Image 1: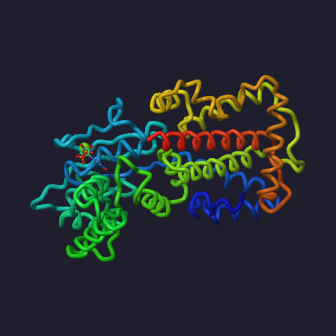
Image 2: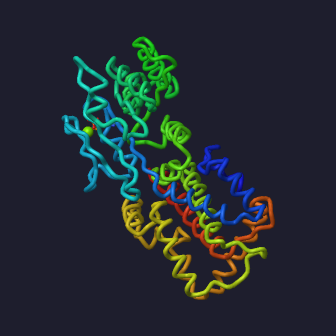
Image 3: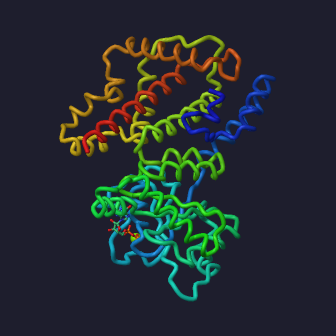
Length: 395
Ligand SMILES: Nc1nc2c(ncn2[C@@H]2O[C@H](COP(=O)(O)OP(=O)(O)O)[C@@H](O)[C@H]2O)c(=O)[nH]1
Ligand SMILES: [Mg+2]
């Protein structure tokens, strides 16, 4: 578990600052509990208060609003969708909160115009300092003004990413026009080469371009883009960043699970809920009430909540009951005898301990609340993967 701060599931991206984890370890081993507690409290506070502001800029029609909706997992026809369309619908800076994590906002910035562009006054106008990073979006070639803007952003110590959207359309068109010689890989390579060349020609050294389709975020370069975002973010912001990603791949589900595991671990340490004996005890009524709260929260984060299941069941042309029958988490706490649940948790705790070894390389075990939360998390994350595979095989 300690090595989770550079966990395989997060693609080697840790979200707990390594030096902080080291100080928890050493203060704990030396019995300086007060100190341990204050480090942990501060870490949890930083994670919970983390704010993330992502700015998108690019000409009208490039696909900013569509990306904002896809990223937030909001349907284009939903109430709080960013309005999309071929007509310029965005004239001012508009912010869109993530539906589950209001601390995460995506900002739709106005296009930068074509003539007399002054990046400095533009960035001032859009209050550049509030953004963690900028996405410069284009559905064709990046323009000179995009480059001027990027250089200014870099000069101000902020990060930018060039994102080329709508590659699904390029692929479709190429396939239609050259059915015999069409090769997806070649088409993508050609687009990327073209963008890179163009950016170099207008003054960007070693440019990087991400090809995406907002209708298929799980494909093309989005997986790399989100990992690169995460690496650049300060550690305490990574937690909420992973949590707010749409549940579109097993990799993202694993990343979410890993960051929540680390959060549970911190909470368990904070609560002083460790013991020197392995998991014992029977799950009681009051435990169940608490677990329900955690379970519901995880279900929302992983899209296994009732409202999402209802939507998914329509897509799968099944009833909600049929969909729930495929899953475990909706039935997890409804098993009549709590004894059964206790047995399940106990088994899980044993396996978990044997796989992860003693935490902090010391024989430190946590009380049951720790394992039961992890068990709920594991169950919901597995359900999310089942739903994803059903959805993938239905298209
Ligand atoms: N096929 C495809 N269409 C897209 C993509 N992104 C945007 N669009 C379409 O392009 C049009 C303009 O997108 P919009 O998000 O409104 O652009 P904005 O003006 O930059 O906000 C809309 O009709 C979108 O449906 C994409 O990745 N693939
Ligand atoms: Mg728009």
